[in-house]
Structures are given as structure tokens and as C-alpha cells.
Image 1: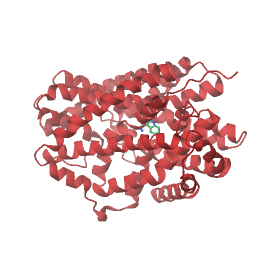
Image 2: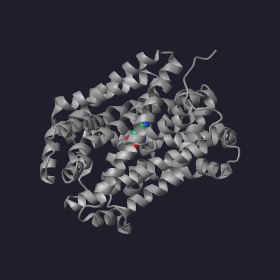
Image 3: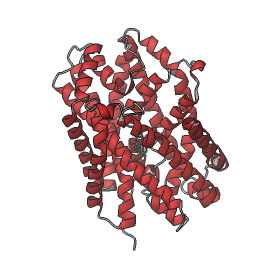
Image 4: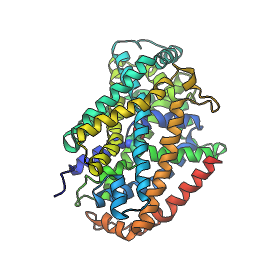
Length: 447
Ligand code: TRP
């Protein structure tokens, strides 16, 4: 008798998967990446990447997980036992460990900013002061490491409690709260002076900005934001019942995730332009802009901490899903106790996270790595949060297209979705469109 791996309810799955997808990728990374890539054109190519590449891969991951009822390594192993495909599974597990390590540094900063906001440290601040405050905060090494460890610890706590009692329960409370606060902020930002300039920057595609780099950034952003390429959605899919409709669920997840990223842009860009700030200020954007926005808002003293609380929550439902990948692997394949697995893997990612924590300004070596010049966190984001995910998504698509074969996959997809008509279109996307585009984009990024 197989041990009980836990399961999601219908709405629980959509909320947990949307909770995984919606996170710092949408609220922190998306706006500054749009800013660095010149605005509207990036947004357009991002949307195309979501529809053409990411959505089919999302369905593929959930389908693979539900069919095998396994973590990523176990899923490869179940369909093609004793083949090198398993290595693609290990890549996913390693990627999870690494993403958790640097992601939790930024997530920890959102907790730090919550405390700064609630103790009134942002009252009446200007843009210049906000930048100063962030510089001081992010170069405080002890604090950065403490917040990293704290965030991973909270993640470990939830994951150790299992699928329905932990992950599902918290996602159901946290996701609706997030929507509410975002809507409020949107109204404030759009009614600021000069908001229209921000909206124009955000929406108007400038075709001159088109470079291979921009396309790579947009596609990787789509994978990162939808939590694809390392088996998160395979693992979550393994907790989904056969009666659930995968195509519809995947559609909702992609819709929520994209809507929130787009919304975040409508909050950040009007605020940046109304302050006369630079839209291309990199990873500090969120921390520099939001406190100023609230300082100008009636009730800002309440909404500002609320916002950072929201960011922490969104980040938490994501880190939970990242940690779940290596945890499900050792629980399924190595028979570890879930609690022990969560604590040990959490501890390892804290260690891996330390260079990222020190790269936020506190240690010159890590903030400007020799030879490459970029910071350690940025480098890790590029290697694990972009390249490794693209490679992982390539493996998942080719595995389903050529090893498992799309006919088997379509049969799985149709369970719970008897009238799903786009099976053939999906098969083309998984066998040809996604792998070819991923490969082209990866190669062009290396060149
Ligand atoms: N998608 C999340 C975000 O946008 C981050 C995340 C969670 C993730 N699980 C993942 C990214 C798996 C890549 C792979 O913040």
C-alpha cells in the first residue's frame, strides 16, 4: 500500500498553484525587468511567451505530475525507468534548492520593510531618502542573513505540515487578501500626478528596443513567474485528483499570475514617473518606490506596512512551492520523514543563500563579483532563475513529446476534461514550438 502523499481540493489546488506562481516574480522582478528593457515592447513579448510557450508547458507539468503521482525525479523514473532522464529530475531538485536560497533574501527584505513601515520609518520620505534607506538596509550583513534565515524557517514550518494542512490551508487565506490590497494600491497610483506618463512608458511598445536579450528576458520571466522548469507544477500536479480539469485550472493559474504582474506594473510605473524617478533602477525599484508612494497617500501609515506584509505573503506561498520540490523528492524516493526533510533542506539553502545575502551591498566582493562585475544574487538569478529553468522546461517538453508521447499525455489531460478540444494544438506546442523556441532563445542568449 502506497503511503498517503496528501492531496489538494479543486479550489485548493488552483489557489496553491496560483500562490506558487504569484510572488516576487510578479511584484518585484517583473516591474524592474520591464523598466530595464524599455517598457511596452517587453510587456508584449512577455504576454506572447506566456501564451505560446509557458501555458502549454504548465499544462504539461501538471499532467505529468498527476499521471505519475510523483515528484519530478520520480515522474521521469516512472515513465522511463533507468534512463538518463532521471538526471533532468535532479537538475530540477538542485534548481529548487538554489532558487530558494536567493529568493529568500529578497523575501526576507520584504519582512524587514514591513517592520520599517509599521514603526513609521517612512513617514513623509522623498525619493532620495528612500534610496538612502534601502542602501543602508541592504548593506547590513547581519540583518540580511537573519532575514534570510527567518524566511526560510517560516517556509520550512509550513511545508513540514504537509499538503492540505499546510500548503492548501495557508494559500486559501493569503491569496484573497493579496488581491484586495493590490486593488487599493492600483487606485492610488493611477490617480497620482503624471500617472499617465508612467502608463505610456509601460504600454507603448518601442520597436527599436527589440534585441535577442529582450526576448530571452521575456521568456525566462514567463517561466519564472509561472513556476515552470523545475518541477514545482509537476509536484503540485501530483496532489491533484483525476476528476479535476487540468486545462481549465492551468488557464486560471496563468490568468491570475499574468493579471497580477500586469497590475504590479500599473502600480509601479505611474509612481515612478510621478516622482520623476528612473524606471531602470534595477532590483531595488520596489523598495525605493513603494514607501514614497505611500508617504503621499492618506492612510499610508497603514497601507504601507500592509503592502509589505502582502509581498511577504506572496513570496511565502512561492517559497513553499520551491521547497516542496526537493522535499517531495526525498520523501517519495528516499523515504525521509517530511518534517526532517523540510528542516534539513531548509538549512542547506540558508547556507547557499549567504553569498546572496551579502551581495546586497554589504560585501564588495559579492556585490561586484570579480571579472563579471554583477552581484552574486543577480548571477544566481541568471543561472538558476533563468537558464536552468529554460533547460528544465526544454527537458520536460521533449520528455513528454518524445519519450512519454503526446497521445498518452492527451489521454491524461482529458480525464476530468472530456470535452477538451485543443489536444492536437497542445501537442504541436509541446513537441515543436516550445522546444525549438527555448533552444533558439537559449543559444542566442549564450552568444
Ligand atoms: N513563480 C514565483 C514568483 O513569481 C517563484 C517560484 C515559485 C518559482 N516556484 C517556482 C520560480 C519554481 C521558478 C520555479 O515569484
